[in-house]
Length: 260
Image (cartoon, rainbow, N blue to C red; front, top):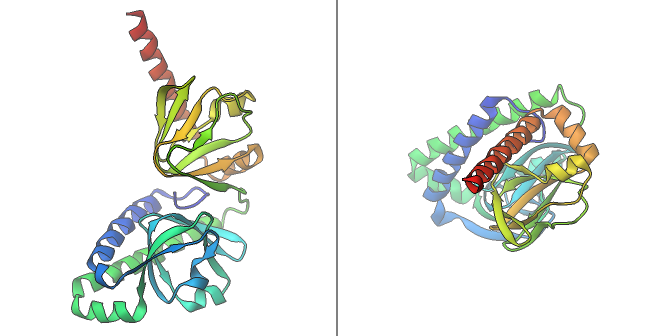
């Protein structure tokens, strides 16, 4: 996920290309990188030296003032300069993160000896700027912003407990989870999928337990936040419809198999 608003398809394609470039650049420059673990709520722009930051694990929210511009996640490469913080930009990780820092001076010396990687970094910088322009253009037509939260879960932690009240709906940003009913595994949740929607819409209690299988980053929405998000990002409705359709098909298959 790049942002909480609806973005054009080309933004998603650019994001995929950026992550592929970032992986190559980081691999090529591994010898000069310095890996660190950041505490939760650390402002990346205020706490690390000028250079490029590769996110090894984590999710960052990039704000200009109080406006959330975009999300950076695992696999992204972020340019950091001192003036970003001076101009009111912040880039925070609510749950901490693991990053690799490529400081400007060391990176410059390395790229003098590796023109291919230098070309890749220039391409990345141009595409990254293009992405920011696309997001700014999208925000020009959107004034509402949902107040969404992210939650982090370690493997084995319960995200939703069967029988609990259903006041929120969830979307898996990163990771995989297992769905169980009465301790029997009945399904799974993958990255990008919406879950917890049935009891959320019916004001019922949770019909299943969802447990993190891997380290998970989950977006959480209450009813007001969900309504605002749907206005900004109609594709959320499509994601929910696909999830419900898959579950109906799977339920019908199980009934047919049991009948046979």
